Image (cartoon, rainbow, N blue to C red):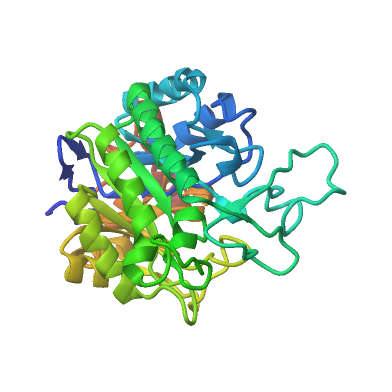
Length: 380
């Protein structure tokens, strides 16, 4: 049978993803001082064993105040490179492209872990680091949240530089792919949206002004990231009534393409409150139409994400030409072996050939043993 598109390679600049299955960046809150540790190796390593073609780390902050929580990974210090190197070595050893996402939380920083309590940290939260958050304007992310300090132009220049330095560190660590987090209400998204950006200087006002800082970040990252390596950016294609819309994302994507961005990772929402707060109704593959619109109208590769649950659903998205890559998030937490299970669903792996051989050989024996038992029971 013809190999499904889900398991066909995708060449991006000088690297080739072995398949279209991608682990979406998912924050884990388990770092100390931004350092990669054993937890991250085990957490992300299992996805490489599960045969995801691209495995993303969680968002790595470009400076300490750019973290969402004190437990976030970092890419702000050269001392963090060695831990990332260890992670990259294992992911690549198992056949995956190693990918990382860099970010600045802006006004949505200084929060507790999502499962501890909602909102931001307050004076009552003893034992947790708390810091002054920043943003494009002095507008809090939600009622009861900290009012951010408005960033001055020279401070924006400094953050742009830090994104570039983070890209340099990611390359030194050996990552194959880098993604800028420009979605879910974090700093770049705060600048893009007229809901959160009320500036009256060159970084605010009309769409071109609001795009200025995010585009400067993209340019700095591309300048510090090797030409042969692909660069992604995650965007919230829509963020709510009166805010950023798909049409804006298409214009933004065209500008990003000119700067050397290769893939638009199409998400939505998160501008106010939690990053999981969405302005659109959830349904299976509910964000796929956004990826399709950006791909067709901007002429750029896109990645679809959001409630994509199984192989046939993912294959249909690719066959329709709605996206080029499929990002799996919470479903990967539920099933780290999602790609090989998807291959079985699509009929292209009947004897565990796609599994890592240390697992596949034993699982094929198990299958045969179970078949023997079933035959024996029928003859009794």
